[in-house]
Image (tube, rainbow, N blue to C red; front, side, top):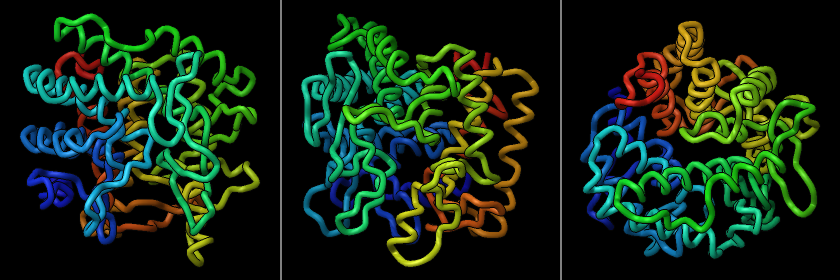
Length: 384
């Protein structure tokens, strides 16, 4: 847990805590901070720091978007992200689950959550908005908005414009959270659409029965059927649209095609664009960044999904522990007490990128404490 300490820092411009995404070169990124918050602050019981981090980003919400990044020296943050705001809603829910601090959530976070949902429904920057079917569409071929955001000059490597699978999993999760939170706050549901409609549309458009997995993106150009790890969030998030059988099939597909020792590949090796070694010049490295390179942070949702679809059985707990064990070697031998940002998609999955990445540490730590040791908040399935 000591590894978590180094990523929680003071932001001079806000006077509050924030999360440095990675050492030695990343500043604080909204997406990374929100994904990392449960593992860095909630499972470690750093609740005051969690509040400050949530407020740092909530106070900079604009048109329903949280900052993608605060860059040192820049007067204003940048907002080119479609998922940071939805991860914020997830982080707020996890904060409430761990602390029971409804007063703080009601007064400081709930208004921001309602604004996020309203803007996503009505439409905001970067062509982000809700379609008639209740699903969220965003982006264009010229802009990167999801976590697969590599760009070299004018080349957007993985634009993923349209309806991205994990964005709509997060959207459904956010609507379910808003539905429950509005009841706790004594209000009528303020959402633009009920979660049930989103679920029906999602399953109709994303589920590939023949392959037993989800499409990565649905757009006017058609469906992107490449096997990527993004679909896993439709299983691992607290509110899922998939049946247990569908979840089992997704987890099986991900395990067979994407799992390596230290994370999940960003693209299946069966794809012609797969790049299994992160090396070369800037174009080659960024061309591999989300085209086969494995990411340590994805081990968190992978383990959570495994435990969920197997009903939190003792056998699934042993599987989760087995998946986490190799990170002890990474902490000792390569990361100087931390976990690297990325790993080669080809075994032996050598560490690459930042030597210390916040969400890699956070998600492995969260999965270990919540899914292996079963030390999550009261009422979580793993603690029943």
